[in-house]
Length: 272
Image 1 (cartoon, rainbow, N blue to C red):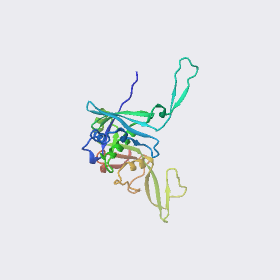
Image 2 (image 1 turned 90 degrees about the vertical axis):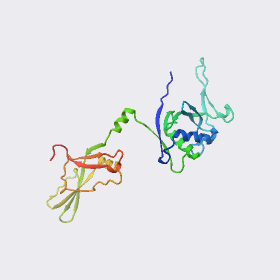
Image 3 (image 1 turned 135 degrees about the horizontal axis):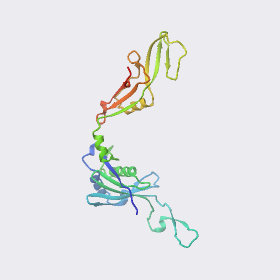
Image 4 (image 1 turned 60 degrees about the vertical axis):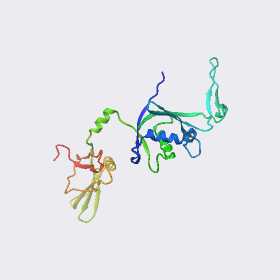
């Protein structure tokens, strides 16, 4: 028994058009482009591939339809089955041989839309990303979207997971914190040292040491935070005692308010 997996997406619209739904905009777009071939999108600039919604209808409150992709004059291999033959012949057919203006269909995507809820049946080459691209194209072509307005088809976690996310106050990242030391000597010279760099000379002439946080996790957290948040570039040893057991802790309470992100360098339990 054949089966097909359906995927659920939610259409998120640009804030300027959030009062409208994807379903209502598509219905209006189809009225403007009521001839199927006027809904044909040229996928590449050299006209080698096209996509279009060739069929749409209303069914139990849903807007349903099919989007297909074809390559003009693309030849299709076919076999002629013979129950008595030792070998099966493979032949290639040109779409022109099947009738005027005929083309072989490369792929089909099925969809159902209710307001901003989208269900799609994907194929090998037509997936949610290609459908999203086509929707933005047809809505711009029919002036349902203008300028920089856009829509995105986004995944939605299962209901039980969404309840857990909604109750989450924040996220904490922890990782070992590495330092690069900058030593200032009384003769004015500066020396960089890391845990892998052991100095042979005496440190009796060192007057001050500053520590620079480093490491892949430290950089990743910096990239995660908003631009308005600034980490200190250096830490003076007189104000902060270096310890290999120190942990970088990013307490992220910015799920809805990014500018409230905070970070701290803390010591593990038991350290003084």
